[in-house]
Length: 243
Image 1 (cartoon, rainbow, N blue to C red):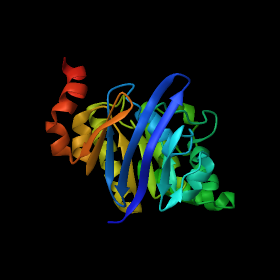
Image 2: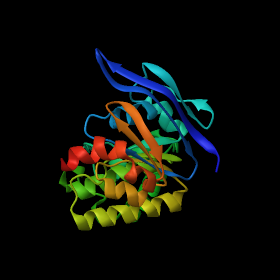
Image 3: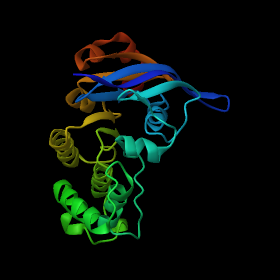
Image 4: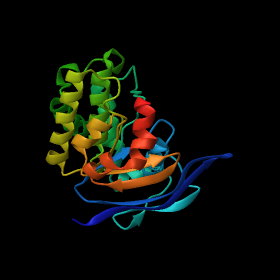
């Protein structure tokens, strides 16, 4: 596999607060990379920098050898798409129209509404929302809103998909269905995926490798088995969960 995402020395300050400090890692094409850490570890800030939503205070991000700009529209057009931990679809627009936004303005850059509609009807079928395509997005429950987030991200035609706690708030049945969907879309669209998830067992199941953040720094990275046995991770992360 070829390295296609490289993060070098990323730091992000918000006034006097350092949310991310000197974080470096790489990602190979086709991987699922887990991003783990307690609340406030800097996971979403790191995501936001990779997706172009937030500019690094220091450091660089390279995607397929090109620098990622601090503009989400340009990052999307390079093939980077993300979901958000707090799901906020356009509530008065239909489920289909929400998805079409991604098809019209992302990497796919479709130029007409009919083509965008055709792409999104297929995607909504795939994520299980076809029957709700013409309903206002405000009518969806949490599990369905999260599926819409995935569909809208896929509509941009990404090669790198960033999933920010897409399982949070779901019950056990919904979690299993969402995991199955993530595996399906990764294979179907040849995606590389970075996934933030607070539940360690889920990351262990999903990830090829895991990067662990603690207080804004990279604590370690490695295969799930190594991460799960590392004393630093147990003390920093499991200690908080179970102490």
